[in-house]
Image (tube, rainbow, N blue to C red; front, side, top):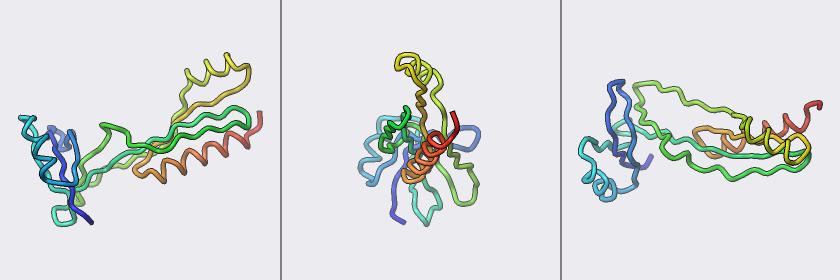
Length: 140
């Protein structure tokens, strides 16, 4: 595993708010110099720390018309984890009800907007594709 650096503000719960993650110490120190109450954490196999990133994938299904955006990092959702302390890595699919309802009214037929999220881009994409198959095969 390669080394990365996380600039983190500790929280009373023992978790941390991540201000940024960097592949080089020099870049991390630039941000750290601007933030008074943050600390620098080395994330690698030796220290046991890692940053859990979350990826999101947006999609729209309207009849046979399927649009799936590429997975992208969910900014501000990274969490600092340590191998000795379990954190729940959540994933799922969330409907965008208001957007779906408005699009359905405007277009005159049923439209589904949703997003999927997971701790890897591949898994976020997989969840989106699975949900699309479910939408396309369910009875009207």
